[in-house]
Image (cartoon, rainbow, N blue to C red; front, side):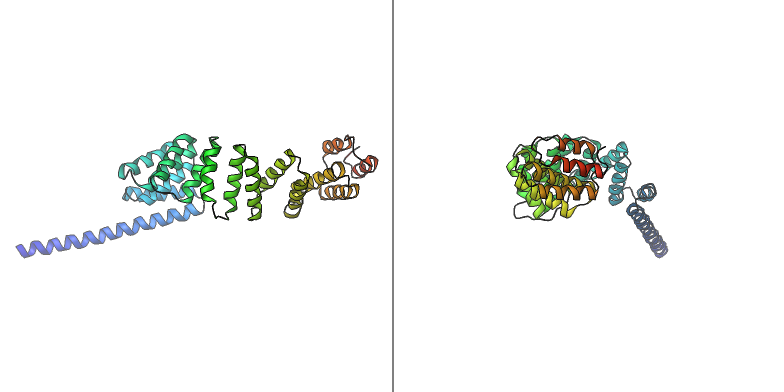
Length: 296
């Protein structure tokens, strides 16, 4: 009788192991399918498979984490926070959960709470670049430019990350430190960043200080690296500088011709140029505008 008991128990355990293994296989299969749909931006289908995972195993946290991201993308913040709370109840000190919570708060527009949570994570020991940049961006959005600049400068020390230089430039400009802003914009360009805003912001700062030499240099970089409206407007601005500031009619006319060839056709800008009292050979320039039907 005792022997029979142990035989029956062995069969129960055996079938139990098989059942658990099958269940684990199904959970992993659903999770991987969900990931595949997620990568394809098919979030409704991904959500369905993640929910299947959690129905079998509510503590499969990777699926729940991804589900939070889906709810954020779908602007279903109540569902996102509901899942965050479940994760916090399981492990309130889990750093991944804290980051996810801070991210949800940020996307919901709760910037101050998001910042406070990121600062808690950072001061708690996670001084990773991603966390620091999240804090810096929140400082920028909350107009705390000096604090953001102080933190970003700890990241760009011995760094050649052009995006960090760009962020530092924006913060310096926001803080009113124009000299630093110019330096960081220039460093961003030197390190290979080709974002339009870097060039246009830097150009605006040089225009504000009436630094025509550096205006010309930045405009020539724009002409070299960009096309379309930005390029032909830059060509036109170059022509204005040579006409009005450098008194070099030959170069001014050459750049104006290139601007029109590229696509410049702004009637108001053309009329404004012709109103400048110091403009020489105004009739020749007006004729160029008329030939290209920019002026009547």
